[in-house]
Image 1 (spheres, rainbow, N blue to C red):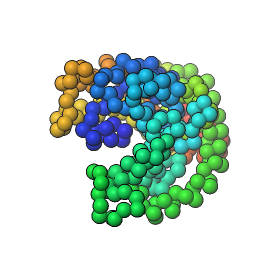
Image 2 (tube, rainbow, N blue to C red):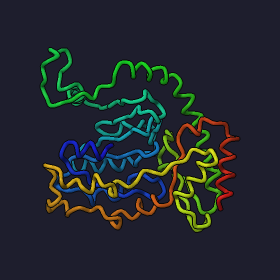
Image 3 (spheres, one colour):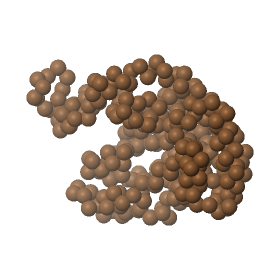
Length: 305
């Protein structure tokens, strides 16, 4: 979604590889990707695991760039005591059906600037301004509004969220501690400095040779066949056809000298290309279950060795 939003403005998304332990943006690579055409940095807090935002803010300030945090997975996450979405110039949250806070669809944007908030309001409301004639349109915008009905579904969940978040955290860290004792397998490590984690998805990375050489597809199919909700992890964005074909869009110039051409090959993203081929993920709702059920999942994973 973050990359698609960039393309929707006729801009070019430049992808960054991930840290193999935390599975989020490797901030140490960011400066090498910045050119004189770079406008913003969009860190994605995958699975609720924060990107190293203190380092990223320093880089953004050095080059005069905006930061827009993708907090779709990070409801409840904190980095160095600060909520995600509060580090950058803006933060975006999703309330899509599978999220830890959901209204079925919809989302929210937070920011620290009143003028920016007014601009966002106009863009999501067909270009209108607050307290103006409804057919007066001041900027290009469309209908990105969340309906009142969906908002009504969401509000009661805010009261339940602290209790669910606490249970999810407790169970996820319990599950992680147990899984990390299995040879040839490790879980997503919280970014150093994380003080709270939202756990939207729970990725695990395994070494096929320690599990009889089974493929990733076979790995998660066996789990699913035994009633354990498991899914493929998100494919690397550079590998998706929609982004490989992006240079066909009007307004996109991949030939710009400072860009250096279409870098969509796996060798340019060695970490995520490797991790994707040997990782699966568990959904957040699994961690609202009793620990006894998590123990059964752990025992089944051990049986795959």
